[in-house]
Image (tube, rainbow, N blue to C red):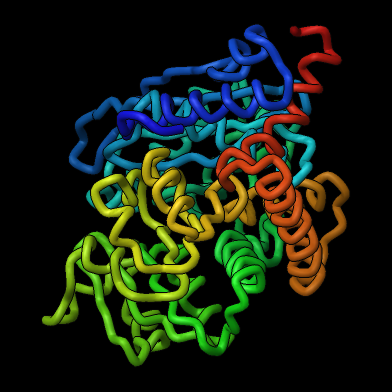
Length: 416
């Protein structure tokens, strides 16, 4: 996985998928099948804006592979959404489902927009318009959406309502991440962060670090980053650095996490309230035990990988570390827990929500958390064992564990 550095997330994903399949003994046909989504729908969504004018938005839905079962994955609202990213994210979702042993393939959706510049009603019209555009390809037994970057339980509620209107029956299992009163699951909102916290525990155990002594840096203060800061603080760790889109905060004695959580806005912004901030690059290279990139892609690259001082990197974001940087930090003895393992808590609890919707029987938060812990630890142990026995880095090990079930299902169906 060495050579010139690529920041193309789809190409990087395809490189590791191919390497994982080759190591598992699969040939060219399987690589050709699994390196791209099996379906990609491009949609245009006309939305009547509050000023009376109609604006046309561009959106996508990718379904990577449905050999194991229906596809599953989030919908993001972001100005930088593009086709290659949506394809890569759908493949990562397949890998997450494979590592967690869920009966799903990966899916992903996105709309090119900036929700920060849209009204509540405009967002509702956009959400409903997206469901109308993709309604033929999705459903509780076909493809199940969920929240992602800049979408939340309210957006899921609008989408579920629109789908139920189109199909003319109540369909809570069509989408996950819903409000509790509409069939959402206990523990869903905190699931990604809780899963990352479990992975930090396991990684620290391997490195012989106690949580009470740990210094943690979290890049990103959105849903995953803010809840993770809360969980780490409650567990007794010192969160010494956090960041948002405007900058980063640092205090070697530990930040006042409760104060920051109270002051952050709905998009995870808080640093604009402070005069003394540091840069994103300074944050990533702080001396700490655990570094958690929980923001966007390509944050740890060959430019800064040799300056990372953390003992452990746990990827809460999708694709925050390039392949070249993965090689550099692994060679330096840093334990990297890759995104397809570390951030799979969201899809695991989404699966629990779908199961509860299908049964009409709902679990307590304690039950959800216990089941999540069991599945995350099992996934970590499988990946870590593959990493040690095959002498490969943790990312390749995770891809090998994640792709195996999907490849076998495709082979047994006679697709390859």
